[in-house]
Amino acid sequence: MSVFQFKHFQIQQKHAALKVGTDSMILGSLCYWDAPKRLLDIGTGTGVLALMSAQRFPFEEIIGLEISEEAFTDAVENAKNSPFQSAISIFNQAVQDYQTELPFDAIISNPPFFENSSKNSDEHKSLARHTDSLSFDELLNSILNFLSPDGKAWIIIPFEASESFIQLADQKNLFPADFITIFGKPNKHTRAIISLQKKQVETKKSSFCIRDEQGKYTQEYKELTRDFHDRVLD
Image 1 (tube, rainbow, N blue to C red):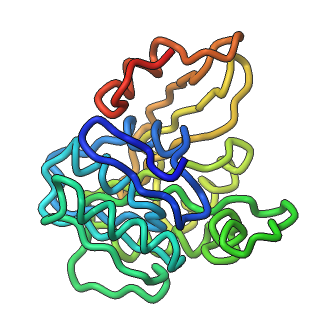
Image 2 (image 1 turned 90 degrees about the vertical axis):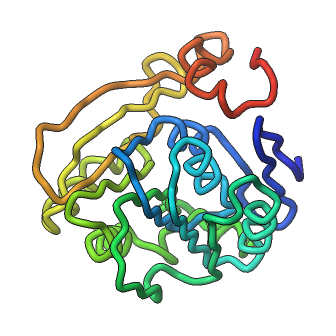
Image 3 (image 1 turned 135 degrees about the vertical axis):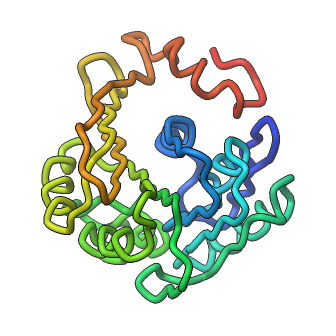
């Protein structure tokens, strides 16, 4: 599907290797900030998280960074054709090379995470899915460098990588404020959504299930994403 239609915008994805999926839908729907002004979307892909965040919060500025030229092409078009174009800027740049003097009070990322799996023969898909282009260490360093003292960063990663990710974050004095276990189906955890901040607090833990035993979307998923989907989910 080259176009994913949302309620208030659409995602053109004919060039990007990775299409809109439930990872972006749940991260973009579950993340939250308190009166944020500036958002950095690390590895913006098609720009879907930048646009979802723009719909939910009155950001003054959103910066999307994308290393893939193909995905960057789609993201620029999607931002331009959205109601939020004045706030969003997309750059074809790796976060490791990005520089700014102004910190961000909001950061979001759906990073590449197939760290130990065999690489896809498709170069663009491999770039999007593997941590060679952005390791967890590099991602956390970027968050440390760009996040404001009172800001919060939201990331979605495989559940099995979450413990080591949090340990690595702790070494950099980045602390989990939220830990949401994502179940693809009941009793099958697949992802973890983690928020990080520079102030240590007690971690708020919760869980969320996308589909029931029959493979149908749960009511909580339908409720969570209803402001984005342009149709009623089965």
